Image (cartoon, rainbow, N blue to C red; front, side):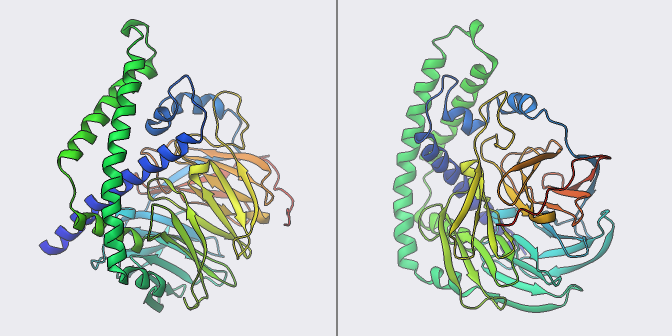
Length: 444
């Protein structure tokens, strides 16, 4: 047991370190493509400064659904908390519970997770155990439940009977190439040192510019930025003095490659999302329902802090491209059908856009082929299948930063659900009287 706890602890530290570097790399990359702003540019993006001030003024429309209740979802013994969820064809909630490590699992150590089935109102119906660290869950049209994580995928009947379980062959093959992984670890060690140097220099220059304004004349956001930047510099410089070993970085890479960030199931295919063997991007792999004939159909997707959500709309793929502040629709061969959204910049923004560091975090097909998006701050929006904005559906503030906020809607649109990982809850919203009428089926 002590050995297992040590491995889990090492995995958490490795994953946290890896995700911090991944987030920093993504922000630095995206900032180079954005125009510089007087309010501080990518530092405000990195630390989320002013986001809450703008969010309340930008999202002023009336929501179509009112908060009904939050349902706490944990294992029977209380040790495992919610990681994600979906809805089956009866409208029941199919929730995945696991360790608090979330996407920090995946080191290959044997762990456990569980599936809980709840009514549409959130009442417990049944549950069963999963004998590996899972990170994602979904259900197909006949009610079969798919659970994936740690390089493994399993499918269960609606009553919880295990139908099939195996280590995904394409991930196992990637992990065999140890020489390539070690070479990548050496390159990452060098890149991290260079990134720290660039970040510290940029931060010091930013502090210097902000401090040119007398303290009594500085804005609250500038004062906060100075304090946060100084703390970050101290943390980065400390990390440089405690340089990670190449073996530690190898462990981070292999753990990340085992993580299944998302699984989605259409009538034809199963799609899984996992980290790539180079860089910090994500790939989408397509298999048949027996997990055979794996083919990588997408690569190089950017997702912040370990979050990359992919769902299906018919045979098509929906991708929450959170680093681009957009969502996109692709056919099963990854030919882009459309991309919608954009980054909010302040008061009066188009409601079809997304704010915060990186949003939308999650996406899901709903009634009439409409598309629901969810943001880390607890904002749910509805779009047609062609990407036209339909309505602001729900708002319920959530704690924590970038995270999985899985979203789903009942087949009649009456109920909308959103995951609150920090509270281990599923928030349930009910349609208000005389709320917006459902959109017409958009077609393709």
